[in-house]
Image 1: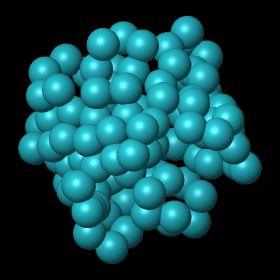
Image 2: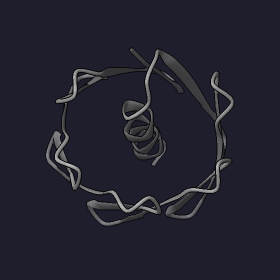
Image 3: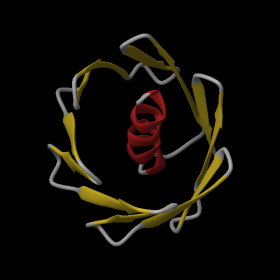
Length: 107
């Protein structure tokens, strides 16, 4: 479950410019850019007012972008794809995010 939360976080981070680091502690996530989130059940509530809800292999974001994970690949409704290899997720838009324990580092 924690991995899925961090993966959802990586999706949000992958669309933003600049390097970022986020750490999850319990049901909360804190990012060095000021963004934070609270996880409750299958929904993540972001400090900027956005929400992300997971239903099976699908994630629905309040900004209208949805995604579906199939194996190690995730397909986003905005045309971006990502592929996970070990603890690194590579995005088709050139970004990469690395998971180390409870933290994610994105370039």
